[in-house]
Length: 401
Ligand code: GCO
Ligand code: MG
Image (cartoon, rainbow, N blue to C red; front, side, top):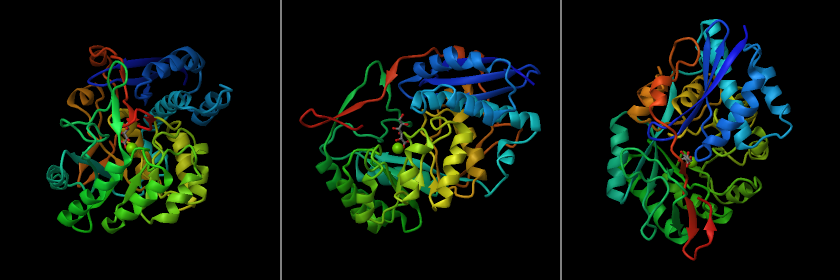
Protein backbone atom coordinates (compact mmCIF):
# COMPACT_ATOMS: atom_id res chain seq x y z
CA UNK A 1 0.00 0.00 0.00
CA UNK A 2 1.04 3.57 -0.65
CA UNK A 3 -0.18 6.99 0.46
CA UNK A 4 -1.41 8.85 -2.62
CA UNK A 5 -2.97 11.97 -1.09
CA UNK A 6 -3.26 13.87 2.21
CA UNK A 7 -5.82 16.65 2.57
CA UNK A 8 -5.73 19.35 5.26
CA UNK A 9 -9.31 20.36 6.05
CA UNK A 10 -10.04 23.52 8.06
CA UNK A 11 -13.63 23.96 9.21
CA UNK A 12 -15.53 26.06 11.75
CA UNK A 13 -18.83 24.44 12.80
CA UNK A 14 -19.06 26.86 15.76
CA UNK A 15 -15.32 26.74 16.45
CA UNK A 16 -12.24 26.01 14.32
CA UNK A 17 -10.92 22.49 13.69
CA UNK A 18 -8.05 21.29 11.51
CA UNK A 19 -8.16 17.69 10.26
CA UNK A 20 -5.73 15.65 8.17
CA UNK A 21 -7.20 12.98 5.90
CA UNK A 22 -4.73 10.50 4.39
CA UNK A 23 -5.78 8.55 1.30
CA UNK A 24 -4.09 5.30 0.16
CA UNK A 25 -3.85 3.80 -3.31
CA UNK A 26 -6.49 1.15 -2.53
CA UNK A 27 -8.94 3.84 -1.38
CA UNK A 28 -8.44 3.30 2.38
CA UNK A 29 -8.52 6.59 4.31
CA UNK A 30 -7.51 7.66 7.80
CA UNK A 31 -8.13 10.84 9.81
CA UNK A 32 -6.10 12.74 12.40
CA UNK A 33 -6.95 15.82 14.48
CA UNK A 34 -4.54 18.77 13.97
CA UNK A 35 -6.36 21.47 15.96
CA UNK A 36 -4.26 23.89 18.03
CA UNK A 37 -6.72 26.37 19.51
CA UNK A 38 -6.00 29.94 18.38
CA UNK A 39 -3.03 28.83 16.21
CA UNK A 40 -4.93 26.62 13.75
CA UNK A 41 -3.51 27.95 10.51
CA UNK A 42 0.10 27.55 11.69
CA UNK A 43 -0.46 23.78 11.91
CA UNK A 44 -2.43 23.71 8.64
CA UNK A 45 0.48 25.43 6.84
CA UNK A 46 3.07 23.18 8.54
CA UNK A 47 1.17 20.14 7.30
CA UNK A 48 0.43 21.42 3.79
CA UNK A 49 3.85 22.92 3.09
CA UNK A 50 6.24 20.63 4.94
CA UNK A 51 4.61 17.31 5.80
CA UNK A 52 2.15 16.31 3.09
CA UNK A 53 4.76 16.31 0.26
CA UNK A 54 6.91 13.88 2.30
CA UNK A 55 3.96 11.51 2.88
CA UNK A 56 3.13 10.85 -0.75
CA UNK A 57 4.39 7.44 -1.82
CA UNK A 58 5.14 6.24 1.74
CA UNK A 59 3.91 2.92 3.09
CA UNK A 60 1.07 3.77 5.58
CA UNK A 61 1.90 0.65 7.62
CA UNK A 62 5.21 2.15 8.79
CA UNK A 63 3.81 4.23 11.67
CA UNK A 64 6.90 4.27 13.89
CA UNK A 65 9.27 5.00 11.01
CA UNK A 66 7.06 7.86 9.80
CA UNK A 67 6.92 9.28 13.33
CA UNK A 68 10.71 9.20 13.63
CA UNK A 69 11.07 10.65 10.12
CA UNK A 70 8.85 13.63 10.95
CA UNK A 71 10.38 14.19 14.40
CA UNK A 72 14.09 13.70 13.74
CA UNK A 73 13.81 14.69 10.10
CA UNK A 74 12.55 18.21 10.80
CA UNK A 75 15.76 18.96 12.77
CA UNK A 76 13.76 21.55 14.81
CA UNK A 77 12.32 19.26 17.43
CA UNK A 78 9.31 19.53 19.75
CA UNK A 79 6.96 22.52 20.07
CA UNK A 80 3.15 22.54 19.84
CA UNK A 81 2.93 23.22 16.09
CA UNK A 82 5.36 20.47 15.08
CA UNK A 83 3.98 17.93 17.55
CA UNK A 84 0.35 18.63 16.58
CA UNK A 85 1.22 18.11 12.93
CA UNK A 86 3.03 14.84 13.73
CA UNK A 87 0.05 13.79 15.86
CA UNK A 88 -2.32 14.26 12.93
CA UNK A 89 -0.24 12.00 10.67
CA UNK A 90 0.26 9.40 13.40
CA UNK A 91 -3.44 9.27 14.31
CA UNK A 92 -4.47 8.90 10.66
CA UNK A 93 -1.97 6.05 10.18
CA UNK A 94 -3.34 4.16 13.22
CA UNK A 95 -6.83 4.63 11.76
CA UNK A 96 -5.64 3.12 8.47
CA UNK A 97 -3.85 0.24 10.22
CA UNK A 98 -7.04 -0.62 12.09
CA UNK A 99 -9.09 -0.57 8.89
CA UNK A 100 -6.56 -2.76 7.08
CA UNK A 101 -6.47 -5.23 10.00
CA UNK A 102 -10.27 -5.16 10.35
CA UNK A 103 -9.89 -4.26 14.06
CA UNK A 104 -10.73 -1.29 16.30
CA UNK A 105 -7.49 0.50 17.18
CA UNK A 106 -7.63 -0.49 20.86
CA UNK A 107 -7.13 -4.11 19.78
CA UNK A 108 -3.88 -3.13 18.05
CA UNK A 109 -2.74 -1.42 21.27
CA UNK A 110 -3.02 -4.59 23.32
CA UNK A 111 -6.77 -4.95 23.72
CA UNK A 112 -9.25 -3.90 26.37
CA UNK A 113 -7.98 -3.34 29.93
CA UNK A 114 -11.35 -2.18 31.30
CA UNK A 115 -15.07 -2.11 30.55
CA UNK A 116 -15.16 1.55 29.49
CA UNK A 117 -13.48 4.93 29.84
CA UNK A 118 -14.51 6.85 32.98
CA UNK A 119 -15.06 10.51 32.09
CA UNK A 120 -15.59 13.75 33.99
CA UNK A 121 -18.00 16.50 33.05
CA UNK A 122 -17.79 20.26 33.65
CA UNK A 123 -20.06 21.82 36.28
CA UNK A 124 -19.95 25.56 36.90
CA UNK A 125 -22.08 28.49 37.92
CA UNK A 126 -22.26 32.12 38.94
CA UNK A 127 -22.92 31.30 42.61
CA UNK A 128 -22.86 28.32 44.96
CA UNK A 129 -26.56 27.45 44.43
CA UNK A 130 -26.17 27.27 40.67
CA UNK A 131 -22.93 25.28 41.00
CA UNK A 132 -24.86 22.73 43.09
CA UNK A 133 -27.60 22.41 40.50
CA UNK A 134 -25.03 22.14 37.72
CA UNK A 135 -23.29 19.27 39.57
CA UNK A 136 -26.71 17.65 40.19
CA UNK A 137 -27.47 17.69 36.48
CA UNK A 138 -24.27 15.72 35.77
CA UNK A 139 -25.01 13.24 38.55
CA UNK A 140 -28.53 12.71 37.18
CA UNK A 141 -27.06 11.90 33.77
CA UNK A 142 -24.84 9.19 35.28
CA UNK A 143 -21.52 11.02 35.63
CA UNK A 144 -19.34 9.74 38.47
CA UNK A 145 -16.72 12.48 38.20
CA UNK A 146 -17.33 16.22 37.89
CA UNK A 147 -15.01 19.18 37.55
CA UNK A 148 -16.25 22.20 39.51
CA UNK A 149 -15.50 25.83 38.52
CA UNK A 150 -17.24 28.88 39.97
CA UNK A 151 -17.47 32.61 39.55
CA UNK A 152 -15.38 34.30 42.23
CA UNK A 153 -16.86 37.45 43.82
CA UNK A 154 -14.62 40.34 42.77
CA UNK A 155 -13.45 38.71 39.50
CA UNK A 156 -15.79 39.51 36.64
CA UNK A 157 -14.68 37.12 33.91
CA UNK A 158 -13.23 33.79 35.04
CA UNK A 159 -11.92 30.69 33.30
CA UNK A 160 -14.18 27.66 33.06
CA UNK A 161 -17.60 29.07 33.88
CA UNK A 162 -19.94 28.63 30.95
CA UNK A 163 -22.45 31.30 30.03
CA UNK A 164 -24.49 28.90 27.88
CA UNK A 165 -24.78 25.13 27.49
CA UNK A 166 -21.18 24.92 26.21
CA UNK A 167 -17.98 26.56 27.39
CA UNK A 168 -15.88 28.15 24.64
CA UNK A 169 -13.06 30.48 25.70
CA UNK A 170 -11.84 31.47 22.21
CA UNK A 171 -13.49 34.61 20.86
CA UNK A 172 -13.57 36.12 17.36
CA UNK A 173 -10.63 38.28 16.31
CA UNK A 174 -7.86 39.26 18.71
CA UNK A 175 -7.67 38.09 22.33
CA UNK A 176 -10.15 39.33 24.95
CA UNK A 177 -8.59 40.59 28.18
CA UNK A 178 -9.69 39.26 31.59
CA UNK A 179 -8.72 40.48 35.07
CA UNK A 180 -7.34 38.13 37.74
CA UNK A 181 -7.04 38.42 41.52
CA UNK A 182 -5.42 35.55 43.43
CA UNK A 183 -6.57 36.77 46.91
CA UNK A 184 -10.25 36.80 45.83
CA UNK A 185 -9.88 33.34 44.26
CA UNK A 186 -8.14 31.72 47.24
CA UNK A 187 -10.70 33.19 49.62
CA UNK A 188 -13.66 31.73 47.72
CA UNK A 189 -12.90 28.32 46.18
CA UNK A 190 -12.66 26.18 49.38
CA UNK A 191 -16.18 27.26 50.40
CA UNK A 192 -17.53 26.15 47.02
CA UNK A 193 -16.04 22.67 47.50
CA UNK A 194 -17.30 22.50 51.08
CA UNK A 195 -20.85 23.05 49.77
CA UNK A 196 -20.48 20.53 46.92
CA UNK A 197 -19.01 17.80 49.14
CA UNK A 198 -21.70 18.34 51.79
CA UNK A 199 -24.45 18.06 49.17
CA UNK A 200 -23.18 15.07 47.17
CA UNK A 201 -21.47 12.88 49.77
CA UNK A 202 -18.02 11.30 49.88
CA UNK A 203 -17.88 9.17 46.72
CA UNK A 204 -18.58 11.54 43.82
CA UNK A 205 -15.20 12.31 42.25
CA UNK A 206 -14.54 16.07 42.28
CA UNK A 207 -11.91 17.96 40.31
CA UNK A 208 -10.82 21.56 39.92
CA UNK A 209 -8.77 23.39 37.27
CA UNK A 210 -6.57 26.24 38.54
CA UNK A 211 -5.49 26.94 34.95
CA UNK A 212 -1.85 27.86 35.69
CA UNK A 213 -2.64 30.93 37.85
CA UNK A 214 -0.91 30.38 41.20
CA UNK A 215 2.64 30.40 42.50
CA UNK A 216 3.82 27.05 43.93
CA UNK A 217 3.32 28.27 47.49
CA UNK A 218 -0.18 29.62 46.78
CA UNK A 219 -0.99 26.28 45.13
CA UNK A 220 0.23 24.46 48.24
CA UNK A 221 -2.05 26.60 50.35
CA UNK A 222 -5.08 25.94 48.12
CA UNK A 223 -4.35 22.20 47.99
CA UNK A 224 -4.18 22.10 51.79
CA UNK A 225 -7.44 24.05 52.13
CA UNK A 226 -9.14 21.58 49.75
CA UNK A 227 -7.90 18.43 51.53
CA UNK A 228 -11.11 17.97 53.62
CA UNK A 229 -13.10 17.72 50.35
CA UNK A 230 -10.93 14.89 48.94
CA UNK A 231 -10.51 16.06 45.36
CA UNK A 232 -9.51 13.54 42.69
CA UNK A 233 -7.19 16.23 41.37
CA UNK A 234 -6.22 19.87 41.39
CA UNK A 235 -5.22 20.70 37.81
CA UNK A 236 -2.46 22.96 36.47
CA UNK A 237 -1.90 24.67 39.85
CA UNK A 238 1.13 26.60 38.54
CA UNK A 239 2.76 27.04 35.12
CA UNK A 240 4.78 23.88 34.52
CA UNK A 241 7.78 24.98 32.51
CA UNK A 242 9.65 24.73 35.81
CA UNK A 243 9.04 21.11 36.76
CA UNK A 244 10.95 21.66 40.02
CA UNK A 245 8.18 23.99 41.22
CA UNK A 246 5.96 21.02 41.94
CA UNK A 247 8.25 19.92 44.77
CA UNK A 248 7.08 22.96 46.74
CA UNK A 249 3.41 22.12 46.16
CA UNK A 250 4.01 18.49 47.17
CA UNK A 251 5.67 19.56 50.42
CA UNK A 252 2.47 21.31 51.47
CA UNK A 253 -0.46 19.19 50.40
CA UNK A 254 -1.76 15.67 49.73
CA UNK A 255 -4.35 16.93 47.22
CA UNK A 256 -3.49 14.98 44.02
CA UNK A 257 -2.08 16.99 41.12
CA UNK A 258 -2.84 16.77 37.39
CA UNK A 259 -0.72 18.52 34.77
CA UNK A 260 0.11 18.38 31.10
CA UNK A 261 -2.54 19.67 28.69
CA UNK A 262 -0.06 22.16 27.21
CA UNK A 263 2.84 19.68 27.05
CA UNK A 264 3.82 18.26 23.70
CA UNK A 265 6.54 15.68 24.40
CA UNK A 266 7.74 13.26 27.03
CA UNK A 267 10.60 15.70 27.70
CA UNK A 268 8.12 18.16 29.24
CA UNK A 269 7.22 15.74 32.02
CA UNK A 270 10.11 13.36 32.73
CA UNK A 271 10.98 15.05 36.03
CA UNK A 272 7.35 15.45 37.06
CA UNK A 273 6.80 11.74 36.50
CA UNK A 274 10.09 10.28 37.68
CA UNK A 275 10.11 12.28 40.91
CA UNK A 276 6.40 11.51 41.43
CA UNK A 277 5.59 15.21 41.59
CA UNK A 278 2.22 14.63 39.90
CA UNK A 279 -0.50 12.00 40.08
CA UNK A 280 -2.12 12.38 36.65
CA UNK A 281 -0.52 13.25 33.33
CA UNK A 282 -2.94 15.18 31.06
CA UNK A 283 -1.12 15.04 27.72
CA UNK A 284 -3.33 14.34 24.70
CA UNK A 285 -3.20 12.56 21.37
CA UNK A 286 -3.49 15.77 19.33
CA UNK A 287 -0.94 17.94 21.11
CA UNK A 288 1.61 15.30 22.17
CA UNK A 289 2.63 13.57 18.97
CA UNK A 290 -0.27 11.18 18.41
CA UNK A 291 -1.05 7.72 19.73
CA UNK A 292 2.57 6.57 19.29
CA UNK A 293 4.15 9.25 21.45
CA UNK A 294 1.32 9.47 24.00
CA UNK A 295 1.67 5.72 24.57
CA UNK A 296 5.35 6.32 25.28
CA UNK A 297 4.48 9.00 27.89
CA UNK A 298 1.84 6.80 29.52
CA UNK A 299 4.24 3.85 29.65
CA UNK A 300 6.84 5.97 31.44
CA UNK A 301 4.12 7.22 33.80
CA UNK A 302 2.99 3.66 34.57
CA UNK A 303 6.44 2.86 36.00
CA UNK A 304 5.97 5.62 38.58
CA UNK A 305 2.28 5.04 39.47
CA UNK A 306 1.21 8.16 37.57
CA UNK A 307 -2.10 7.71 35.79
CA UNK A 308 -3.50 9.22 32.60
CA UNK A 309 -6.03 12.06 32.69
CA UNK A 310 -6.13 13.28 29.11
CA UNK A 311 -7.33 16.73 28.15
CA UNK A 312 -10.63 16.57 26.28
CA UNK A 313 -12.03 20.09 25.93
CA UNK A 314 -14.20 20.93 22.92
CA UNK A 315 -11.27 22.44 21.03
CA UNK A 316 -10.00 18.86 20.62
CA UNK A 317 -12.10 17.42 17.80
CA UNK A 318 -14.13 14.19 17.85
CA UNK A 319 -11.22 12.68 15.91
CA UNK A 320 -8.88 13.29 18.88
CA UNK A 321 -11.50 12.07 21.35
CA UNK A 322 -11.99 8.85 19.36
CA UNK A 323 -8.25 8.21 19.33
CA UNK A 324 -7.98 9.01 23.05
CA UNK A 325 -10.70 6.47 23.90
CA UNK A 326 -8.88 3.62 22.15
CA UNK A 327 -5.68 4.40 24.08
CA UNK A 328 -7.57 4.95 27.37
CA UNK A 329 -9.20 1.55 27.01
CA UNK A 330 -5.92 -0.27 26.42
CA UNK A 331 -3.33 1.21 28.78
CA UNK A 332 -2.80 -0.29 32.26
CA UNK A 333 -2.56 3.10 34.03
CA UNK A 334 -5.70 4.88 32.83
CA UNK A 335 -7.06 7.39 35.35
CA UNK A 336 -9.80 9.61 33.92
CA UNK A 337 -10.72 11.19 30.59
CA UNK A 338 -12.05 14.74 30.28
CA UNK A 339 -15.27 14.92 28.26
CA UNK A 340 -17.04 18.03 27.01
CA UNK A 341 -19.66 17.02 24.45
CA UNK A 342 -19.35 18.87 21.12
CA UNK A 343 -22.15 20.87 19.51
CA UNK A 344 -24.61 19.14 17.18
CA UNK A 345 -22.96 20.99 14.24
CA UNK A 346 -19.52 19.61 15.17
CA UNK A 347 -20.88 16.10 15.70
CA UNK A 348 -22.46 16.24 12.23
CA UNK A 349 -19.17 17.29 10.58
CA UNK A 350 -17.34 14.46 12.40
CA UNK A 351 -19.60 11.38 12.31
CA UNK A 352 -18.40 9.01 15.06
CA UNK A 353 -19.37 5.83 16.84
CA UNK A 354 -18.30 6.50 20.44
CA UNK A 355 -21.12 6.62 22.98
CA UNK A 356 -21.68 7.69 26.61
CA UNK A 357 -23.26 5.24 29.08
CA UNK A 358 -23.07 4.89 32.89
CA UNK A 359 -20.53 7.67 33.36
CA UNK A 360 -18.21 6.15 30.77
CA UNK A 361 -17.39 6.63 27.11
CA UNK A 362 -17.08 3.60 24.86
CA UNK A 363 -15.18 3.76 21.56
CA UNK A 364 -16.72 2.45 18.35
CA UNK A 365 -16.17 -1.25 17.66
CA UNK A 366 -15.71 -0.79 13.92
CA UNK A 367 -12.26 -1.17 12.30
CA UNK A 368 -9.96 1.84 12.81
CA UNK A 369 -10.84 4.77 15.06
CA UNK A 370 -14.55 4.84 14.21
CA UNK A 371 -14.66 8.51 13.23
CA UNK A 372 -14.59 10.44 9.95
CA UNK A 373 -15.01 13.93 8.54
CA UNK A 374 -17.88 14.87 6.20
CA UNK A 375 -15.86 17.08 3.86
CA UNK A 376 -18.86 18.50 2.03
CA UNK A 377 -20.47 19.62 5.28
CA UNK A 378 -17.11 20.87 6.60
CA UNK A 379 -16.81 23.14 3.54
CA UNK A 380 -20.05 24.87 4.55
CA UNK A 381 -18.29 26.24 7.69
CA UNK A 382 -15.33 28.41 6.63
CA UNK A 383 -12.49 29.27 9.04
CA UNK A 384 -13.07 32.26 11.36
CA UNK A 385 -10.10 33.89 13.14
CA UNK A 386 -10.42 33.42 16.92
CA UNK A 387 -8.10 33.70 19.92
CA UNK A 388 -7.91 32.58 23.55
CA UNK A 389 -8.11 35.36 26.17
CA UNK A 390 -5.19 36.89 28.04
CA UNK A 391 -5.23 37.65 31.77
CA UNK A 392 -4.08 40.78 33.61
CA UNK A 393 -3.74 41.42 37.34
CA UNK A 394 -5.81 44.26 38.76
CA UNK A 395 -2.85 46.65 38.23
CA UNK A 396 -2.58 45.68 34.55
CA UNK A 397 0.36 43.25 34.81
CA UNK A 398 0.07 40.44 32.28
CA UNK A 399 -0.57 37.13 34.09
CA UNK A 400 -1.02 33.48 33.08
CA UNK A 401 -4.43 32.71 31.59
C1 GCO B 1 -9.33 21.98 30.21
C2 GCO B 1 -8.56 23.10 29.61
C3 GCO B 1 -9.25 23.85 28.52
C4 GCO B 1 -8.28 24.82 27.86
C5 GCO B 1 -8.59 24.90 26.40
C6 GCO B 1 -7.65 25.83 25.68
O1 GCO B 1 -8.95 21.60 31.29
O2 GCO B 1 -10.25 21.51 29.57
O3 GCO B 1 -7.93 23.87 30.58
O4 GCO B 1 -10.43 24.46 28.94
O5 GCO B 1 -8.34 26.09 28.43
O6 GCO B 1 -8.55 23.62 25.87
O7 GCO B 1 -7.82 25.72 24.32
MG1 MG C 1 -7.26 22.46 32.06
